[in-house]
Length: 566
Image 1 (cartoon, rainbow, N blue to C red):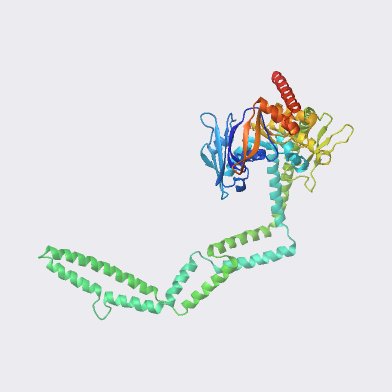
Image 2 (image 1 turned 60 degrees about the vertical axis):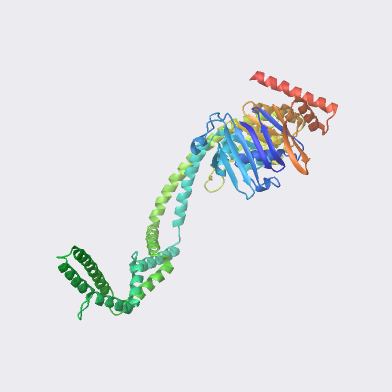
């Protein structure tokens, strides 16, 4: 349950702390006082989208934090490595910066907004004043039914089977082509494969050729340099070079080393130098051999490099990419040449996959049919308690259209039908339901669906739209009954609903030092009576105060009777 909500610098709320209780919590206030801001703040800690426009004018950032207690064991905790503290409490914090950035934390650990959203939808469920309009969207009716029926596993099994059908059909369709197109494609692939195979591509060849070309382009200068170095090191045929001179120095020092240890050390150094220079001479000689080339070699190199360049422009930016393209062409050619055999195999696979998908779809449909009957009974029971005893509610099934008779959701088209008056035929909800009826049907549906959810807190934001009189009293009683098993937070304008609350908060807007501010106050019994009087007539008179007292007394009597039943 949501135990404590702290709001800071959000819109007209400078700072507010709201301590909610288990049971039925109601919030009332004038239109524009800031009740919706409280709901927005709760939405923020659920991971819903926020805007920097929420930040109070003049503030650098906004902040919302919430404490939850008595939480169920959620898989999310283990998956994310986060859990309630030793007191069983979970602290969720979210700050909204002026630059639009968000910082989210759960028990001090930073989280992404997407992770917070995954957690939030398992802790809270917000039913807004416009949610009743979702009933008008028949595309959502199937999701409502599946949620009630718990058909998640069956629907996932069907979706996997249907995806297999689509994959096989996609591959099969990709192989379908007329004879002329097939011939054109074979000719193109054959030409491309031949051109690439004839090129005898080798990874690293281009780099080697480019390096050799640089050598050949500067062969004369390099030859002069290498020949000069060779002459200096070896002396050539005409005289002594560095190697022979170092050898002479080594011998002289060795002779003197018989009489002096210092000369012996110098002789050893001279020997090391001679060896190094001798090695250098060998390297220069080998390099000189690489500078030899035959007439026309440079032209051949240029021609090969030009060919590689032209191939790269057609088939890829590197030798690796061209070889990959060659392999793909070979595979495609193989597929096309043997496409008739492959199509025949895919036809057999498609037939099996379709049979499997239809079997899964029929199993899913059977579960939905059973769930539909239970859902209709439950909704009608709930609506009877919501002062709609004459309403008939039914789930209508129709087969899916299209060639397959199925799509990713199954083989069923589902929509909700209702008859609001005795003797009237069942018709689609979006044709006959009034605003008040939609609100109560949605409340009934939410209550039924909540029974199968782990969510422990339900928030109703002005769900009384279009409801008044005796129906409002029935809605109030239903919300209290829901609060016996779930924590309920309700924003309302109706005194009947406000009177039924276990805890009553007033949201008021005022001015101070030239700024608008909103404060949230927990009301005592006398204050509640005054607030109910205001909700009933806009002012506080003796008659309205008496009416407020009657509402509170009637609510207390009803709640006492419900508690005795339990």
